[in-house]
Length: 318
Image 1 (cartoon, helix red, strand yellow):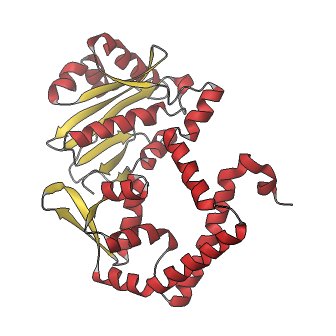
Image 2 (spheres, rainbow, N blue to C red):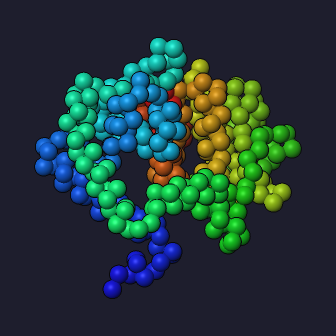
Image 3 (tube, rainbow, N blue to C red):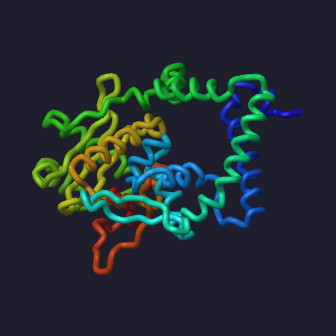
């Protein structure tokens, strides 16, 4: 019995993952036999950089249709093995350019015969299937580009996450910024003086200092908020994010954070930091999925809250 096969369309993603894992294992075995220190998942980036001039992470992510954090993770692993170099763009120091090292180019030369053999055998396998699987996959990806699986399922189940609209601060929304944050702060934490100072006067504490506030609006109701506070010429702090309790876990917070990061990039930010509680595991998982990493407080730095706090950072210069 093959449960995944019997489940059909319901287990489609699981079946693709199983097939991918199977092929990755075979390729890893080939690399092992060739005595090359390369992981199969590095192939797209290795191949792309072998054929292109130095590229920024954002350009690589666009070319490979991968997330920025995924590219950064692979690039970091390759850099540790000495296959990749990272340097600042002389035309724009906010960007970092990726290029293969001499060792990386020698590795590509060694791997090209294996890649040609893998291409040949894969084409033969696809021909045996009697179907144009690559064209079908292209159509599937285009369909998901037009409308994600989340959006398709969310509409059928009447979920609200992606339907929420992100809007900018107006004086009429000031009370929502305070009420939403008080709701989560009083649910397990104390409202500290630093919280009260920001929530009572967001215009003075955030907006007039170069920051901004976003809200999530769903069916006419404000259901979420967050702030980006300017902490330096190219540094912003993501703070005071809150979502209505009954709507948490539906993608509303993610949508707001993505919009906030995009705005920070437009303003030339090189670093986005945040402080969160280790108790808020779902929030920390969200931040990690978007590229934030835990960091230690800098020497002499005073944390802004008495409650136990974790500092996380997102490097936008990579």
